[in-house]
Structures are given as C-alpha cells and as structure tokens.
Length: 187
Image 1 (cartoon, rainbow, N blue to C red):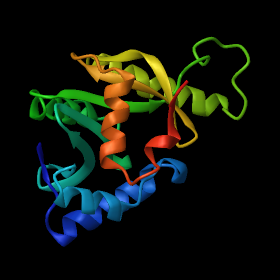
Image 2: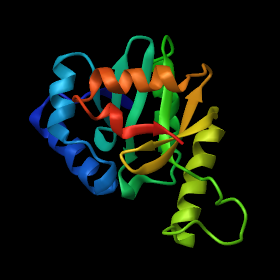
Image 3: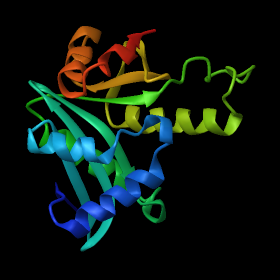
Image 4: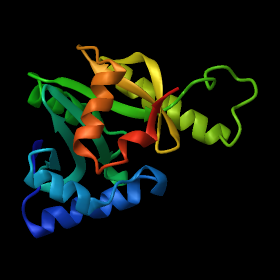
C-alpha cells in the first residue's frame, strides 16, 4: 500500500470524485478551499493506492503540532477488506510527531436500543457506531467533549495525545475562512 500526495490531475480527480460521493453535503468543505490550503501547507490531499490501483483518500488539515484527519474514505468496492485499518495505521505513523485527531458524527445516545435522537434512523445509528468501533480498534480515543461543527454534532477522537477544545478550535480558526470558526461550538 502507498499513501502519497495527490499531485497529478488524474490523482486529484480520483480523490475529488470519491470525496464528493463519500461525504454528506452538509459535512463537505469546498474542494477548492483544500486545494488552496495545500499551497499554504495547511492541507495534505493524499491518494491511497494498493497494487497500482486507487483505493482511497485521506485529506489532512495541518496546524502547528496537530494533524487532523479531516476526510478519510475507502473506495466502496474495497471496504471491509482490512485496507482502511492498514491505511489508518500508515497515517498514524506518517504523522507520529504530531497530535493525530479526527472528527466523527456523534454516537451520544445511540448505544442503547431505546428511542433514538430525533432525525437519526436505526441504520444511521448503526453506521455511526460501527465507524466509532473501527477507530477505537485502531487506538483512537474519544475526548470528553463534543462539538457542533457547522450544525452537525461531532466527537473528537485522538491517537495517543489529548487535545483540548481551545487547541482544536484555534486550528480551525487559523485555517478556515473568517467566520467559519464561529460556527464550531462546544456542546
């Protein structure tokens, strides 16, 4: 497996196509924002390949001693093959000198089989719980706070090093356009 910067037009097109297909509209940043941020050293747009075939993406937001796995997706045809776990381990190693973190949609109130929070289907609840379990198996630990990120309640997971809300929020305020940071609040 190889994880490297997407640099060719073809690689960037593959990454963008998977990005557009894999994430809900309300959780996506404009791809152009990330391309522009890459020029400033604030983003890495990574192309994941195995046996010469594109199989996934990782888009990292970088600030100081932090590396936020902003977006991570494996091609649907390659999911449940262990590839995602191997790729995440490689990313953890790649950013070993930084605090490695990521956001997932909140699982608050989904663990019990009772009534689900409004607007969340049983299928969505199961997907969120599976996603969190995947990251936990790879040594990611949930922080003791949640954030409302552009209207979506999210949990922050970290690998080894803890990150406080102020530190996390400072990264977003520094990298995202003015006013975006105001739309991220502690829950």
